[in-house]
Image (cartoon, rainbow, N blue to C red; front, top):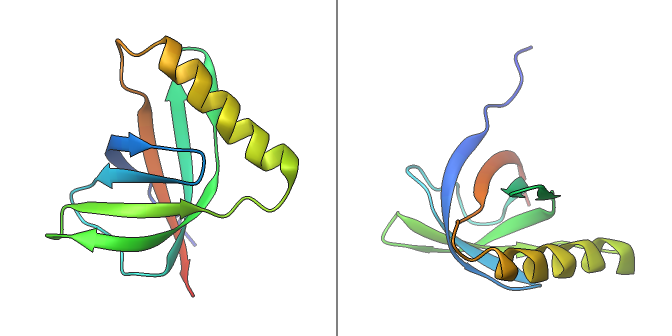
Length: 99
């Protein structure tokens, strides 16, 4: 069985609860995804779910953090990314399953 490919995406908006991404082939609504976000030396890998698709190009993923530690990691990434605003983070998306 081959591993699921990671899809590159462009970040258009980011908060502690969700993000908007431009991606060449959006996944169906309610698809659970693993996000890999890298900005400089800072990494974050939240799980999410596709909540909205706009014109088959931009989609929103809500983060599915369950623990305070998971929520804190996303918040820390957001703060560190804000300090490095000259470069957009690299984003890769891995589809997992549809709810």
